[in-house]
Length: 376
Image 1 (cartoon, rainbow, N blue to C red):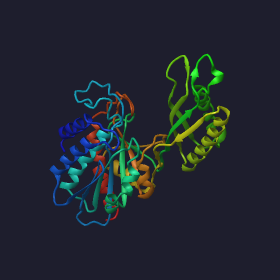
Image 2: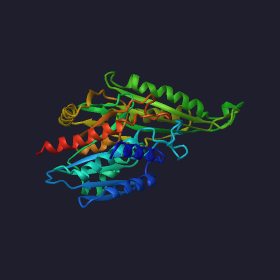
Image 3: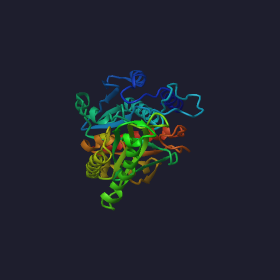
Image 4: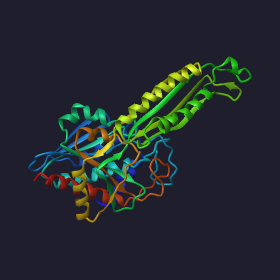
């Protein structure tokens, strides 16, 4: 694709963000673009709202996969773009419009200039939740074209255009959503002794929960429990019968998240007794760590240097990505692509520099060539 085509594609995708497993317009748009490129080397499968596209190589000895996520976020966009979201309360605030555009641009090049090995482009739904990677990985459609090696990218607002970043080993953390519901007994604010106040129970629980990390884990073990939302009560002069807290657990080791959940549930049982209430927990979506295989990161680093793209060594982060489920089963890696935005990921003003689209296509296409030549 020429630059103007990349810009047009990204902007058209930016206007139609959809939530996980609801990417119907997005899937239709992508399929239309892919059909325009299709040749006899190209095969297409759909899975739910996702798409798999296989391009047959010239003398294949392996299959190389590239994954692009598709979904947007439940965020009201506050940019002044002429191409801002037309879906109220939905926004591509994590750069998945960039990811899909880069995948399409790379796909076109691979179709017209096939490499030795087979290539599978994976347009995956529901990365932001409830997690599309694992069920897609387990699907019959994916298993029929399962790659031998796989890679993916994610935009990095803090890095300048023309740079990429990755590291051997852990890149993203293990994560779990956290939804805890409290049920007590409501009543008049003047008669607290006749009620079981869930505002008080939930507030105390949040404070106690923080001690799981500070006093329940090895200090050398990195972990975070964050509560981002709390709801309780309906009016100022009534004691709340119910409360709900919503948050996230993040750890650098998969076993640590199991320890935290065990301690959380013990704490819940104690609070049920002390506050005379019922407490239930839902862990929502759980994402396995993104763990990069070192030899592929080394290959990528060398490849970027040969193609005038600056490689920066990344730090491990407490961010989560369901691509970790694919890397758990298939060797490969993930990297950051610099997009130089003044606003960060999941911000309603995210503004990636569109010059990074060409850099993204260049980095992905050259990674395909490098991975293919590795087995030449």
